[in-house]
Length: 203
Image (tube, rainbow, N blue to C red; front, top):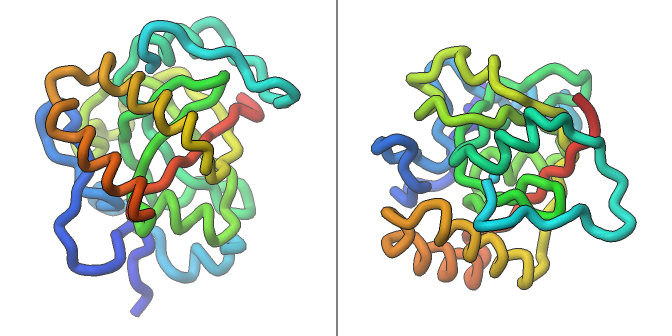
């Protein structure tokens, strides 16, 4: 029986921040959104504080339309799905807090969650939608009507980028930040949480 690759490994109860009041378990898929071991093998296996930073020097990123830029500046959530090597979406979809950093979407997530594991397995393309429709399990397909883009995922180990993300989160999510800052810092320090950067590469 194929194991779900959308679920976190291990039995811990660590979780991610809430979306519209509901706790989002790290790596927990919406109903019917499983990413099987076969999909991983066959496949080759995060708003802004006050001002979005410009693209990094030398970075070649896709020019996003104004509608998407506006959504990135205003939305509290993005929805992410890794792509398989054939370009099709995996069955894993999830909403997550994010920062708009140097023209990219930057997130912090569990190192054993499906976003991290897909990247480690070589699935470095993802589809991103920008908007806030609440938990993906309740959103249905509504998030697909939001501005979106194709992205290249990379692991970001820049401590300065992590600090920028925390500063952006403090401004974007003030009601919950006191509860989450220490968790993010501890997780980043012990490598149980990692930064992933999603750079736009297409529509």
